[in-house]
Image (cartoon, rainbow, N blue to C red):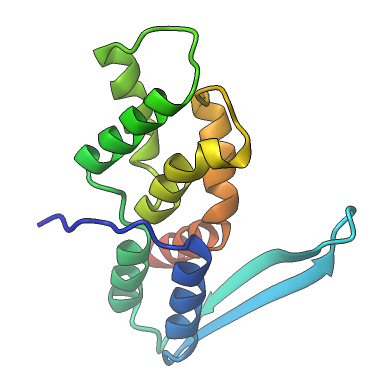
Length: 156
């Protein structure tokens, strides 16, 4: 059963996931923080260590929930709203819509919907390309994607 994904702040979702995972037995999460080239505080590489006492299926379940894609209908509605608020060079087609939704289904729904909902609010006049969306979404969901990949490796 698919549940609706609210437009949530992806940082809060990630912080909650990291906090929940850190309380589980057999799970250690290490994050390196640094000052970036632009002088801003950045989160560096994240390492997830799972020892033999870790309940991998339970951890996988938690991560899967945090990385759940948005229902396709919500993604289509957000794309449609964005198309109405921005300029674009080509007309929408079923193939174009399908290409966007296929790619966006690989990312956490809250990060996708937040990006689509706020794209025009960031001064972007033009409808984004898939790579532009993916770049922003990956930044928003970076920690979750790293955690998901680490847990998948541990489960393999």
